[in-house]
Image (cartoon, rainbow, N blue to C red; front, top):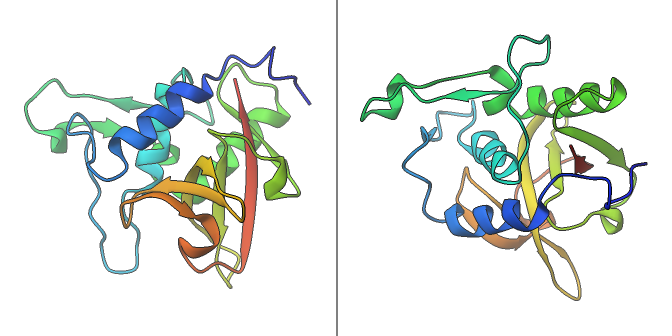
Amino acid sequence: MISDRQNRYNRARAVNYAKTYALSPNPSFKYFKIYENLGGDCTNFISQCLLAGDAPMTYGTEHAWWYNKAGTYNTNDDSWSVPWAVAHSLYWTLKVNNEANANAVKGVEVSSVAMLELGDIIFFEDENGVIFHSTIVTGFSPTSTLVSHHTYDALDVPYTRSWRAKRYHYLKIRI
């Protein structure tokens, strides 16, 4: 595993962004409202945090990860890649990028939440094996790892109280 000295991911900036926009979404990006049971803004928010932590957008690759502002006053005109906004797609993109050692944001899956640091990502899997939610580690309490996320908007909540999940996937982020 890569040491943190070699990692260009700026955890402090990613966490600062998360804490700034967890409860009041950044108006410069589209906000995905909750739609039935089909999702909301969680992964869009996590992607914004990764970008704030100096993760480079990647275009034209099989596992592209990007957000383009249309330059209008309406974020509905913006465009984005599927992994930018869909939890299971971001999860697999981070893992594939890691396996290929791509020049992109990567995620190393670890076996325990205790191995995570500020700025790492926790993905939530349902009883059908579908990864449906993503959060960013923004703090620690004596009894829990704290996360922030959208879909519902939350700041520094214990990850086990965020959404009900059958399984958690803990990813250490690196660039």
